[in-house]
Image 1: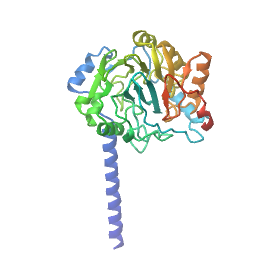
Image 2 (image 1 turned 45 degrees about the vertical axis):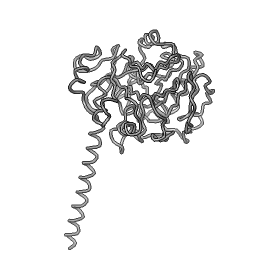
Image 3 (image 1 turned 90 degrees about the horizontal axis):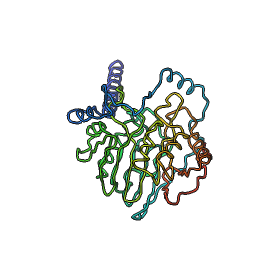
Image 4 (image 1 turned 180 degrees about the horizontal axis):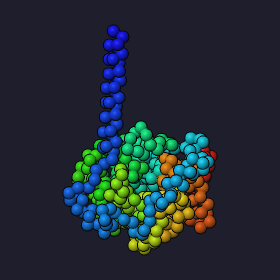
Length: 370
C-alpha cells in the first residue's frame, strides 16, 4: 500500500510539474510575439532601413561591441554600486484633471511609460504595467516601485505609441489589457505590428510607421523619427524597426526619444519638427559596454538641446535594474549637467503630473531614498 501511495504521489508531482512547465512554455512563447509575414513582411523589406535581412541604424554602431560582455559582467560582480534604492520610492497617484485647449502636461508612470496630455488629447508612450519586464511573469528584472495607477483607471486615450519591441517597452499583458479597456489605436514602428497581431489587437487598431512617416489622429500629427538602437524579443537581432516620436498639436509639440544612443540625427529632427515645448529623454540604463544604444545623462542633455527642447523630463530610470550604474546616478548626473548648461528639467516622482508651462522645482527626492 505504501508503494502504491508513493507511486501515486510521484505521478501526481510529475503531472503537476509537466503541467506547470507546459504553461510556462506557452506563456513565454506567446510573449515572444511573432515575426512579420505576408504583406507586413513585404513592407519591412521595402524599408530604406532594412538591408541584408535586418534593420540598420542611421549611423554605424554595435549593441554589444567585442569584449563588452565580459566588461559588463565584471562591473556587475565587483563594481559595488547600489543598484536599488535603500528606501521606498515615493509614488504619487495622479488625480483626474480638466485639460485646457492649449495645455500640456506629462505624467511619468516609471521607466519609459509616460502619458502626454496635449491640447485635450492623451497619448500614452511605452506602457509597461507588469511586475517584470521579461517574457515570463516569474523571472527577469522586477519592478522597484508600484505602478502609480491601475491600468483600469487610465483616462480615455487617443493614441498608444510604442518605440520598439524590447520587453521594458512592449509588454504583452499590458497590451492585452489596453485592448480590453481602451479603443485607441497602437502606433508602432514597422514590423512590430506582428507582435500585436498575435496578442489579439484588432488589425484596425494597428498603425505601423517607418521613419519620417506620420499619421493624423484626433487633431494631432504623430511622426515616427529616427533613433539609434536595436530590436528583438528572442534570438533574432533587429527584425523590427525602432523609433523616436514627435507629437504635434496646433501649437504644442513634444519629442520622445524612446531608447537611443546619441547621434547627429537629433539635430535633424529638431530642424524638421522643433522646437519642442517638452522632451521625454532616455537617461538611464547606459553603460561603457554599450555606448551606441543608450545615452548617458550628459548625452540626454545634448539631445534635448539638439532637438531644441524647452523642458526636459527624464525617462528610463528608477523602475527596473537594467544596467550596472547606481540607482540614483542618472538623476544626479542629469541634474548636475542641466545646471551647468542652464537647461530646464523636471524631476517628478512616478505618477506626478508635470505642467510643462509651470513645472515644479527639482527637489532631489531620489537622493532621500537612494
